[in-house]
Length: 146
Ligand SMILES: [Zn+2]
Ligand SMILES: [Zn+2]
Image (spheres, rainbow, N blue to C red):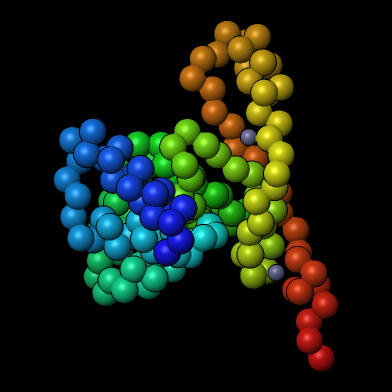
């Protein structure tokens, strides 16, 4: 792990402690797995990366829930209704360009959120959030090797 991701791990653990959460070995393994993967991944991929047995998938989901509650996890919905998960710095979020075939996901360096927030506020809404992902077929999948 780079020093940057090490500090992300520390930030997240600190936030968990301040919310009274218990820090377990599994929790640390799951956070490290998300940092190492460094792209939106399914719960199954996270479990494998964390080197946890298949029976621990419930533990993975429970810890993802905890990360979501403290605001350092982003859920990336796929068109088929399943979800990928990505670690974010507390309070940040990203938009992605996702390949429909191989599920490669790239961060898009843009957020249209401010305008959307303004519109939602004009409708009298508060605690506004938005999810926006872009789907397509990546270059690699569009031209299969012959
Ligand atoms: Zn692809
Ligand atoms: Zn946004």
